[in-house]
Amino acid sequence: MHPRLSTDAKGVYVISATPFTAEGAVDHDSARRLTDFYLDRGAHGLTILGILGEQNKLSPEESLAFARTVIDQVAGRVPVIVGAASPYLDNLKVFGARMMEEGAAAIMVAPMPGLRSDDQVHGFYQRICATLADMPVVVQDYPQTTGVYMSTSVIKRIIDEFANVVMLKHEDCPGLDKLSAVREHGDGAGRRVSILVGNGALHYPQELARGADGAMTGFSYPEMMVDVHRLWMAGEHEAAEDLFDAYLPLVRHELQPGIGLAIRKYVLMRRGAMACENLRLPGPRLDGRGRAEVDRLIARQERRLAAL
Image (cartoon, rainbow, N blue to C red):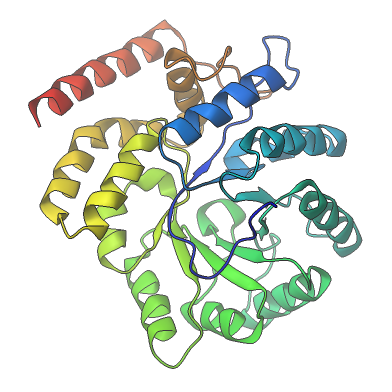
């Protein structure tokens, strides 16, 4: 029985990269290896076909095949959230139903570009949640990429009104005050859902301090996010921040717009998690200088970790 996502989800849900061969085909052998890599490092869940999973470069058939490969490899050990690329209701209903049949735990939906007002955003999620009525839904708030700003008030309204919303993927930046407001609403008169944070874990300790339940992002050292979460939840906040600080230069480097996913894939290949670092074209590639920069950051990171 595959687990379904609930409002009490906690921990680290790693956003998986999508591995490709050198020729640009989806690499299913590497997808299985990458899945085990994440789970072996303590991931509490996985998210696939996200924005940084290059979902927009996959055909519907490739998306389904990739999801099936990952879900089969996970074999029910942790929940798997699947990102929905299409906001069009008929396509979304078919896609969501198929993913849930395959064993997905929830469907993640970001707002459709072009929404400008709170009423438009609310109306969008009203239709989404009605379409996915029997499926857990993750609301993704990522204005840097979608171009849609979701106010705190509309997020609280969506959570309170639509029972199948079980999680907020919080990626507004700066967004600490928004995170606090949503968490305090859920701990008070409102409905409480899980809140996981993204942005490469750049502000992870501060977000945990504001009430986040964990992270949903794809940093190439997922064990950092897992261990920081464990230490933080155990009350060892200084130790958590010290550990985070050792990884921070690489976290920052991976978060660069445009080239960041190429850096992440290079590190994952370097760590043996997949065979090829390539993004599907069009997409950037690291040159020799770029790889050398990453290698130096990893060497410094290893020295700092050894000193802890």
